[in-house]
Image 1 (cartoon, rainbow, N blue to C red):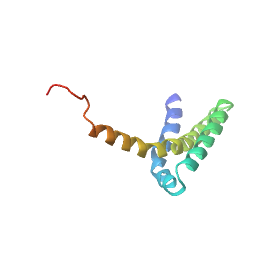
Image 2: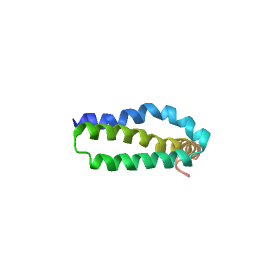
Image 3: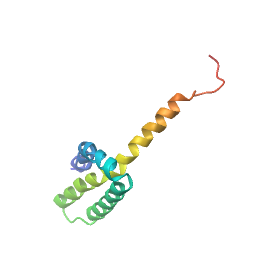
Image 4: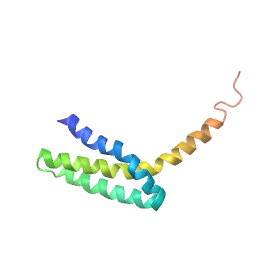
Length: 96
């Protein structure tokens, strides 16, 4: 059962990151991030008070949906940072 709870969170986050990426391009990065954090917070709270497994499973799926939006807008800046850092010599003055 623990594996299914992990998959219920991870699978929506994996598949819907492709869908929510253009939303952050269209509406800016801040609005989808705040909406996602709100969804993630509410569904995590709902999961803590869920009285049975099917309701907990449902809250984990919804938490996975909410987890996509906060993580998606942060990916392009991380790519820019990694490209910038890869252009810099890793150890200045090292021996060849």
